[in-house]
Image (cartoon, rainbow, N blue to C red; front, side):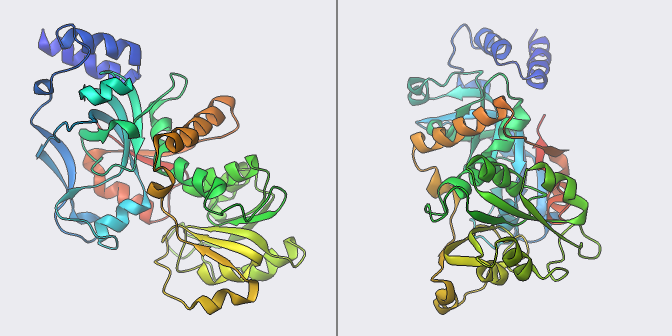
Length: 380
């Protein structure tokens, strides 16, 4: 009997039916919609980092302790976990973490257990949810503060909803908030890397905001970048043996100045880092802002503020947590994103789903610049 229930549970997980899972959870929890924590296994499968370094340091462990359900939190049975560049920075040691740790910081699945505080917020066992800015998501289970949980509308597939976490939320704050309103509708914005990842989202959102957008991409990703609706596209050759742009193959500054009639752009969104930061500053218009949010080619080095004086330029180095600090801000961004997806105004491309036991391969794929959209782990 229990085996049949487990088969039904996994079948429902694959279909992603929240109503059906609620029904099964209700039955399996003795008719109570709050599942006992004792029904959750003591150990789980997870991709664990016990030393920092290359992708090979991530190891799949089948007996990692399942996280405890803390006050104000819920326990999520993950179906998907997102793979992001920031995960590679944690794994490599660029961003420091206490060892050992489980990789990842976004995911989604079904609520397996709730705390009383979470129930008071309206979160129920069986709810189909997504979340981000929570560590340790490359695992079967993740303990998530209830205020970070977003219920996924039935019209949106769960893999797409998980993709809305780090990359979607980041694109939203980059195009809506981080530039401090120093750019207005009708003015020019330069977005690097519009053929992959976060900046596919950012380019579309920038257009929804009414900005004129210059995108950049490699030759192999022209179709993707054009599909975002950018007004102008600057195409780079690819670095030998990779899908990454060779940023020395095109002289960016004169091209941007030609497009903008010599004025430059009011905002640059740059997740590339080391290879692009100097030209990002050079193409700014007077009182423009350089939004540096990533290190795909390496970290931006320290530089003197005098480098900004020619344009009286602004610089910000933002992070997602500071732009989703309150429940209200999180839901504003989530509701915008889900609304645009449902209306067809925002296209989300899920590129690859790796099984969790291919954790190394997932990071290798992302770091090689091969992604043409969101990259996920699927967790069974």
